[in-house]
Image (tube, rainbow over all chains, first blue to last red; front, side, top):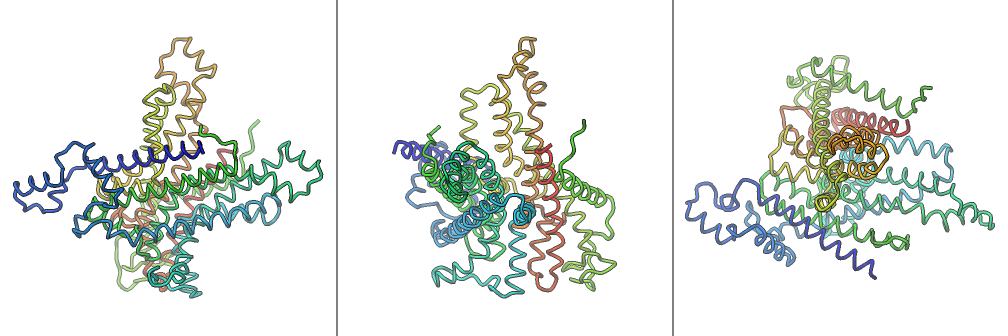
Amino acid sequence: MKYFGKKLAGLIITLLVVSFLVFAAFAIIPGDPATAMLGTEATPERLAALREEMGLNDPLMVRYGRWIANFLRGDFGTSYNYSMPVMDMIREKIPVTITLTVMSFLMVVLISIPLGITCARHAGGRLDRAVIVMNQVIMAVPPFFSGILITFFFGLILHLFTPGGYISYTVSWTGFLGYMFFPAVAVALPKAAMAVKLLRSSVISQMKLDYVRTAYSRGNGTKAVLYRHVLKNALIPVVTFLGSVLADMVAGSIVLEQVFNIPGMGRILLTSISNRDYPVVQAIIVCIAFLVIVINFIVDLIYKVIDPRISID
Amino acid sequence: MKKKKSKNFIIGATITGIMLILVMIGCIWTPYDPEAMDVNLKLSGVSLSHIMGCDNFGRDIFSRVLKGSGTTLFVAVGTVFIGSFFGIVIGAFTGYYGGILDEILMRINDALFAFPSILLGLVFISLLGSGKYNVIVALGIAFIPSFARIVRSEFIRCKNMDYVRSAKLAGAGDLRIMFVHILPNTMNVMLSSIMIGFNNAVLAEAGMSYLGIGVQPPDASLGRMLSEAQSYLFSAPGYAIFPGVVLILMVLGFSLLAEGVKEN
């Protein structure tokens, strides 16, 4: 419980630091939100009035305080370009990006753990060697290119899905998840390859330790030793790794949304960046960072379950 | 006795060597002008005169791949240079001196770690505007935290070692100890992280150019070619496959090299 409390405190501090950094970055850039909203033709009086109304003359910390308070209440500001609340623009997109990230994360776990264990058990065998070579290649493929290849083979040649035929979750959940399957594979592939590699070497190095010999000497079979003793220890570096690649997977999801024509947060982020629509960019970046930090927090908790020795330091 | 180089190192060095030669050739000579368009050759396939075929404007894909790999490599080198230079300086000072500055910088570092480098790059691009040099600055800044973190932990490991103490006793100043004594001892770790960083930079640049906010035309870039090729996937699959394979080889060569360096 103490562990949970301390982690939660750490989580809140990181969230505040991250949101402040993002806020400060967008506050110090040249360019004035009032001019952005009114255009360059506006009179100086109009601009000054709007600046006062938007609170732009207040000190940075005051503005940040107001912004984060609004953010927590779900008010993400107003888009310069569309003059509508940012929340209304991204509300329906958030679940799309989260689904893609979570699906690919689950795929990484489901592929890498069994495959890593099998490779380690038959280290040096034919399957193991084939997987090592494949891993090395897959790690070098940029996710958007595997997305293009998947579109080509599974979409255009095998007709397993219609490229660009995205189905919204508001229409049909099964159709939605079905369409998200291939993008999720593309995000998951390189990370799964890395996780397999890591788990394999982790299991192999654990198998050489004394406690394994003791377990064998007590009459346990290979399977029992592997699943009851080794796996728990071997999984620790893998869980750390999974936590650390999560941020990359969110970024991967955003790129893959473009490849597969999925209207998630990535699309709005890109258009807002090219339009310099800062409130939208700011809100999406903070949302993504929050998502990463919160999932990392969950990973930390899982960590504790796997290895109770882990303490806060 | 000279140690036998690992297989990874040899394969990695070969692939990287070939890629570098091609890029260098691309800087001075390409079979066709990469910008020259020819409507008659639009999306034509592989032939003897155009070994990778032509794109949607009838431009020679091989020439564009040569030029594009040059751009990608240039951006990656610049990114790693900025990232590692500032990373080394920040990591060296925080690791060597510790204290409150170290605490603050590492907390910021942790926070930045929550951002994927490509996303951090996007933030900086939205502040700076797109274009080749802005991509280098944006990704360079985005890469500083990871380098700083590695250098810092190396400096913490080394700062109490005997050779550092004896250098201190011999009267060496802090700066001399940091950059003449400790830094060369971290080279092994640095070398492999620079190579990994290089790979990440290639992937990030390609990703950003694919998204259309990285390198801008008329500069050719592998990522941008791939995004244009996607619309012609069915009629001209080679248009996407060749730049993609070159991108993969570039990354693969360096990751094998990095592994070889670690093993040696």
